[in-house]
Structures are given as structure tokens and as C-alpha cells.
Amino acid sequence: MPQNYNNCLDQLNKTRDIIKDQDKNEQEREVAYEEMRVLEEPQKIIQVSLPVRMDDGSLRVFQGIRVQHSNVRGPYKGGVRFHPEVDLDEVKSLAFWMTIKCAVVDIPYGGGKGGIIVNPKELSERELERLSREYIRKTSEHIGPDQDIPAPDVYTNAQIMAWFMDEYSNLRGKNIPGVVTGKPIEIGGSVGRDKATAQGGYFVFKNIKEKIDLGKQVSVAVHGFGNAGSNFARIATQDGHKVVAVADSRATVYNREGLDIEKLEEYKVQNGSIQGFEGGEEITWQELLALEVDLLVPAALEGTITKEIAPTVKAKTVLELANGPVTPEADEILGQNGILVIPDVLANAGGVVVSYFEWVQNLDNYYWNREKVEKRLHHKLNRATEAVWQAKSDYNENLRTAAYIVAFLRLSKSLKLRGV
Image (cartoon, rainbow, N blue to C red; front, top):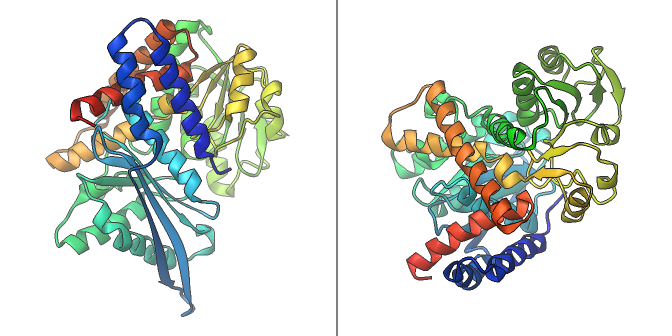
């Protein structure tokens, strides 16, 4: 479901006005109000045509996009998605969110995002490689380890990042692993990157769980059983919680006593879906979203919880592991119903934090073990969560607005210091 960039502007203006209206710090109010106008539009939009020779000898021309929203705090950073519904408005929104997300977790990046309008399931592996390399050739002057650093996103993966890195390195005549993150470990990737989004989300939830007293064991429903959703379900189960429902693109499975996540993962690997899994009963994904659980984790695509779905949600807490899974109208309804929403710009920031770690390791040519990666991820996200929770208290706002306040104050100070 493509995003509406106007929603980003609405959130920007709302948060800017909240900061301006506070009486606590006049300097912060004025800086935020004046300098934040710079963030209303991306700094650069790159659109490219990508001719690719198909296996049958025919020629197809695909359209690619790269949006560079802001580099005030560091190089642009953000994934590249391959999806038939990619459009400019969506990519602008995602780039904006990356700017906010990197500021929330206080890493020296700005926001970027890219995409190609394609259904990758229709391409052979060799066609996919040609398309990936062509995208890098056409955008190479705009990217680089100190300029703009792509990463995996929807329907892109470590192998595609390897092709990206190889093509960029060939163009520059030397090996440059830091041009992308999310690479295979064998060519400069970081341990822990594969489950970073889920692990980070769990660290955030665990911190907030202690503040709202959900009890020792919580019940969890996960909508989306890809990399992020499956890893989150496994991590939560291993920590003693009960995952009662899981949905993928083809089926939803429910067991009130708790699903065996290890067996469910094995079943999906063997069958391509959780459909037919005998460890629970099949329900609809709408019924999953309406379950009375402690924690609901939307981990699929954007716009899952709409204004029509929101009134049915009975979870105590919603953790946005996907980007933008709750629409603005639905977010308001959930808040009115007393449901705590942990926003995506905090909840799913583990991926970009470990991407930052990968980039640092590439630049140093010195690589960390898993324990060090997870320890530093935990530290980063705990600090970010504490900052957002403090802003929630200081400004008497929900967690989403609090996260934006944290980000905007950091961004506005950077803009002011740089003389923008």
C-alpha cells in the first residue's frame, strides 16, 4: 500500500508546532520552527531508466528511483526495494522516515530510499542480477560510502547487495564494501544483520514492557512471517513469551496455548508457507489483528491496520516492526482506545543500527563478533527508547510524536549549527 508523503508533512508540522508551543526552552522552539522547513522536501530525487536484456533475448526497460531526503547528520541511508507497486510518493515517504529513524537512534546518517518497479518473482536469477547491476551503473555517481549507502528492503536481499557492491567496485576500480550494507558476511557483511530488525524491536519492547507492567509472560500475535516477523517470534518465544498467532501472505495459524515457532519455521521452509501447519487452527488475518493479546506485531507491508481495522484491535500494545503498518487515521483510533503504539521509527530501527555497525567495520576493515554487535545494539536502542519515553513524559504526547520530537530537536540543532 503506497504511502502518502502528505502524511509525513502533517507529522512534521504537527511535531514542529508542539515543540514551538512548549514553554520550556525558547531557543529549542525557535530553532525547530525555522530550520525544520528544510525537511519538507527531499534534497534530491534520481529517476532512471534501466534497459535489461532478458534470457529470451528480448529487451525490457524498468524504472528506478532513488530519493535522498536529508544528509544534514551524515550520508544518506536507506534500502532499495524491488516491487511492482513502487512509486515516487512511497519512496519519498520511506526516505523521510529514514531521516527520522536515524536521528531517533542517534547514528550519523541521513535518510534515503530507493526502488525499482518490478515483480522480481517474474525474473530469473540472471535477469535479476542484470537489473541490479544496471541500477548501480545508473545511480553510481550519486552513491558511495561517504555519500549514500543502500541496503536491502522488500524483495531485495544479501545476494542483491553483493551484486550492488561488486558492480560499484568494478566501476571504481577497487574493492569498496562500505558502499552498501546487508551484504553476505563473506564479503564484508556483519554478523547479526540477518535478525537485527527483530532483535532491535525486541530490545525496545522489553524496555517499554518494564515501564507499563505487562507481566512476566506476554501473549503475542505476529502479522507477517518473513525475516523480521519470524525472528521476532523466535526471540520472544526463547525469552519465555507465548506466540499464539502468526500470519504469512497465504495463511494465518492460531493456537491459544502457544505455537511451536521452531517447528513452524521448519514447516515454512519445507512448504513455502505456514498454510496447512497442524500445530494450530487456521483463522483469517483480520481475526489475528483482533485477538485479545498483550502484544500485536505488524511485521508485513505498510497500511495493514486501517481505520476500518483499528476499532477491532484488542491488543494492549502494538509494536510496528514493519514500516508504516498503522495508517494515521488508525493510529488516532488506537490511541483513543488506550492502546500503546510503539512507532516504527523506534521499533524497527535495529536494522539500520546494525547496518551502521557494518559500515563502521567496513571502513575500519576490522570485524566484530556477534556478542559485541548485540551488546552495542542493545545499548543504542535502550538509550533511544529512554529518550523517547522521556519526551513522551515531558511533552505529554504519544510515543510516535515523542519519537518525532526527539528526532526533530536533533535535526534542527544540526541544521542550526551548519548554518542552514
